[in-house]
Image (tube, rainbow, N blue to C red; front, side, top):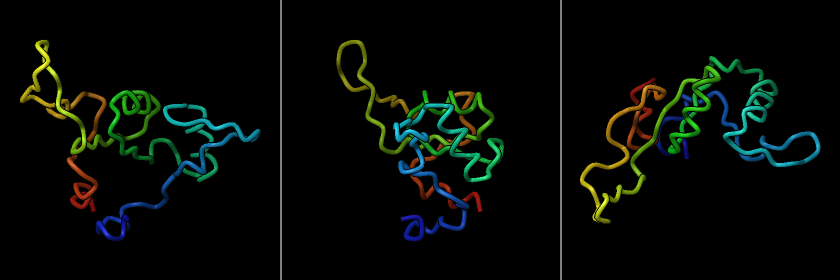
Length: 114
């Protein structure tokens, strides 16, 4: 997929679900900080050299506290319902929280980083 989008050269390594098991075989998924630290150690990557691309702001906030750079992908987020239940023109993708280093609409938005 990264090749197809023209962004494969931006990635040194992708940490996938298969990298998220502890020694006993127990699954530890994001935003589990201990799992992330283990995966980074196994990959020989400093947390400060890592970038998390994610659509869930809570995960981005937690990982930013660990020193990881964050990219918030917003193109697939649903619209927000206002108090009356109607869809708001303002989506959850508007603005950029302080713990987000870069906000993009899709993975193609990473092309400009090369």
